[in-house]
Length: 422
Image (cartoon, rainbow, N blue to C red; front, top):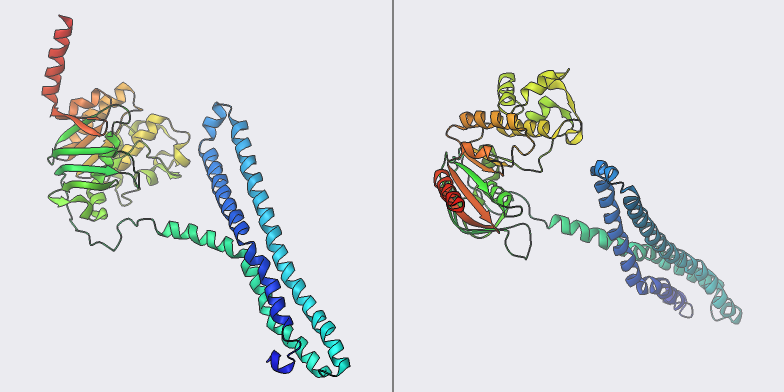
């Protein structure tokens, strides 16, 4: 249309379009670097903020406020600097596009006026050309803004894509087997387990291990040996990368996670209390539990005595993470929360690490009576806990180093001690 109105003025709008878009295209690499830098530094800034809040007592005790403050200020400064640079480039591109659009009208008039004077075109043709050129270039101004923000959009989308690409727990891509009741018959065969996409040595490698329902087993081993990983694997929380793990003659990875969690409970060392009342925390996994059940499980775990001394009792408000409660009190409440669900399979990771000897002895004795025919697996370093188990597993460097009845292990240790004394 513009060429028909005035061939002599039709070249101005395409040239203006090229001039408007060229800087935005040339600056895409710089904008990508700034967007990635801003995203990275913002992530680190948020991480140090959360970490500082969660570890505030430790930071104060170590007098490390200056270190974390310096880190925070550094991340804020870098994020602000990259943000300012990004805004400068973005605003520059938008301003450049608007300037070209404003100059376009003047250029059409400046070029068209001599043509009108010479009679090559009419005044109406020049006015029409200026109007059509402005309307043709107007969308390009918005495109300049798009080019200025395109890399930020790409970085944000890439971040969301990475999030959405994470594996979904209990996804619909693979059918799961439903089993209403699970008893705890475990079978490991050349099983290897890994956390995520770790390419290093597998943290747990079990060639052969059989556990019968109702057994009481202690898992021993040094720090980092793989005791906690074994319990996580039995709960289905660690990826089985090779071999086979069966639960009640079913492949554990194929069992519906809801069925596993209904029949089994795992108390980890990282378990924590949440903001709310004691009642809400203990009944978190079984909100319809009766008061009688609540009292029984609190007594079992050694928590009833101190709960009765609280002015509000079960309605006592617990702060985030159990702030204000001792380590032993928190642990007893966490045990109560795990056991009130009445699971068939009980997996406990260092359940008495914060207990004093009297509380530990009382808990172990009551747990032995309460466990009954349930399957009980305990990772521990405490000798008192060994009183309620029948079998001992020793994990060393992620592998099963010993699997014998408790009586046999004790007899061997006694004989070894006698030889040393001789």
